[in-house]
Image (cartoon, helix red, strand yellow):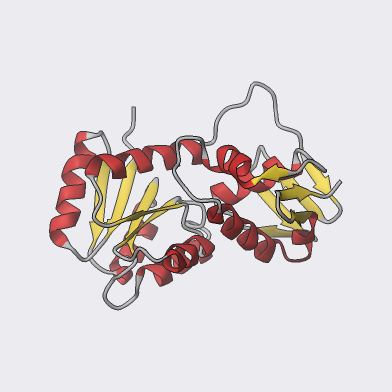
Length: 229
């Protein structure tokens, strides 16, 4: 079985080597870069299965790295985990808005990081279905689950794997109101420890990317979200 390739972008050499040592023991192939520019170059060169990026980097910081990865078609769908020494919710929210799939706050245990990586890879993997999933069209919005493609008014919309899962789940149950915790289980997985605010961030990002088609996702105050019938 081929090893999953992980790219670690962090300027702390000791931390990078610690992460490399432990992830190698877990069967991952680890590449690394010590600054944002080198990390972007490595991502485009290696096209890893997952990217770990520190928020605080010299020169190009982790948020700019995340933004650049999501704007490049070859790396737009690669899952990203942010590393940050900052505990403020606002820092995590900004990272999630830019397309990060998960975050972990320093200091962390290698076991926790490995568990987060495995959880993100599980939920972003394209699982084979017993039968082809139905194509969904709502007005100018089209969702093709087999190709993992979304378009609005005929224009392709690039979504992260988490955003796609969230949109597909909502669109597949039009009219039904889902709580934030239900959407976390459906789009992120039951083994992921995140707060309800995470779903709000992903929905906000979805609406921005979808433009006029984002109006299909409605907020039900005090409950959660639903997709218009």
